[in-house]
Structure formats: C-alpha cells, structure tokens
Length: 396
View (cartoon, helix red, strand yellow):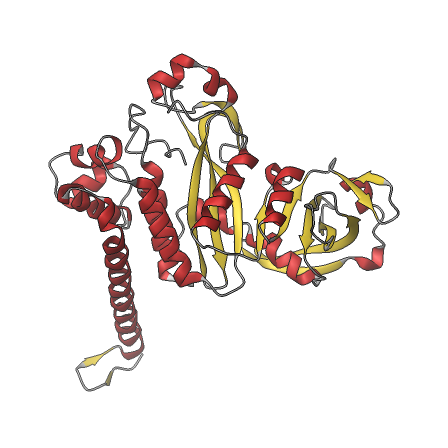
C-alpha cells in the first residue's frame, strides 16, 4: 500500500485510521459505561449504612466489569489493589446492607432505560454446580446448565427484554422439598424459618408480583416448559398480560371441535399448507430458520370475570429433523403468527444474561445484568458461606 500524508505524519493510511477510529470508539464507550455505573451506584448508595461497605460494593462491581481470567473475590481484590479477598468476602457474607432494595432500585433503573412500550418478561432458571451439599438449597437435581442431574443450586430468574436490550431484574433461590424439610440443612445453611418449599412456577409468580409492585409493566410473559402450568398461566392473565409459554408434547389442549388431545396430537391436525418458514435469528452456524404454525385451542385458564381472548397452540418444526416444540399462547385479541414467534424467540435472551453476555444494542443492559448477577445474586443468607467467591442467591 502506498504511503500518503494525512496532515499528521506519513503512515499506512487505511490501517492506521481504522485503528484510530476503533480506539476513539472504545474510549467513548468506556466513558459512557463509567457514567452509567456511577449513576447506578449513586442510586443505591443509601442501601449501605457504612461508607466502607459502599466502597467495597463499587470495587466489587468494577471488578466484575473488568476483563479478568476468572471473577472471584481473590482476583477482583487483587485488581482493586487489596492485600487479600477479606473485604469483598465480608461484603457478600456478613456486611449489613439491603440487598433486596439494591435489586429493586437497579431493576427499576434498568427498566427506565429499556422500556419501549412493548417489553416481555422472561422467567427461567439457572443452576450453579456445587462440590458439597452444605450450600443452601444444593441437592442432586436436574440442571439444564449441567445437561442432566447434578449436585447444584437452582435459582429462578426474571429478565426484562425489549427492543432496546435486556437485563436480569429478579431472582429467587429454589429450595428443593428435601432441603426444605431437612432441619439440619436449614440450620447449617442459615435458611430463614419463614421460608418454606415453593415450586418454580410459584417462585416465578412471586417475581412477577414483585415486578408489578415496582411499577414494571410488560405486554407478555415468556418461559420454558416448567412454567406452562395452568396456575401460573391464569395468574399472568390476572395481571393483565399475555403469555407464550413452552409446553411438553403430552400437554393436553382442547381443540376447536371440543375434544381434548395432546399437543403432539394437535400438531398432527395442522394442514401442510399452514406451515410457514420463518427466520428466527442467527447463530454460529448461520441463520436459523424453522417451520411454524398455530392452531386455535380453547382457553382453560380464564380468570373469573375476564373475557376468553385468543388462545392458540404455537408449534415449531425443525426443517431438517422434523422435531417439534410446542408453546401455549394467550393474547387479549388476535395477533399475527410473526408476533407470537418473536415472543417465543426472545425467551433465549435470558440465557444470554445467564452467560454474563454484554448486549451490543445497549450498554446499560449488560451493565445492569452484570451488576445484579455479580453482586446481588451473590449475596447469601448468614452461614451459607462463599465458595470461590460465589455464594448462593438470596431468598426473595
């Protein structure tokens, strides 16, 4: 490439100018992130009764946003210039501060930035594998993260997603029935007396109640098969929202004729011409396309005094393997197939939040997600302890 003069000095023009632009963009992005972080920390400052605790909070969050090989109390303390991890471990396990208030303020802050009038609330769970059953709620249970049965803790989480980005805004530790009934486990793990066993759909309902009490509104709720039961679906409708919830193949629906069939049986009733191939995003292997169709079904979850609305079964078919996935949907009025597909697809954003991924469309989205996952989610009940810098989620 021919050297040329740009006014500063002779250099390889295209390469150097691209580098300068990248550096300038990174500087602006870092300044915007710092301003957002300062704003968020300023809003939650009143939740920390001691200055030292508030400073440790800022250092912990700053460390979680650094590019470190691993994020735990040791590595973050080293990056912050501490001699050891004791201050940060104290913040997570013993320091006095209102973690629920921090979560509520941060959630409202994120929603104020992300709200576009057409948001979706996503309920799901994430698991954290453990080496010991001494951690609160740790038991051998199914974990999608682990890909099967594993010794782990499970937390039900709530994500707010819109066209502007997404952020985790709520969490609740799932306490398995065996752990809830084990007096020794409760005492060693510091489980509060008032905490009883609650199913994952019940925890999801409580998270939705909490969000509603904070003034957080959404048009729809999305979730996987765990959350497709009638009780949660009815409670979602009582809150004035629609839903797109995955269900299993043996889920029973009432078809338009009035007879009851399984979701798999209903899918066989869909005419071949009713299937539509739709693009649902891009991945590492290229554009993802599936065949989609929907079938009108009879609602089985209408709250007292509410109209029937539109209840459909949405079916997704893999275009090569023919594998089917099913979604139970309800909307106040008719909506196009593309709208239901968009809601079903947006559910995967919660997996992005679980992987601590930074949203490319809005800096404050991933910043808030990291803040919540990295600090409030690590807060544990007294006695639960911190394992490798990570503790169990607090009880909601």
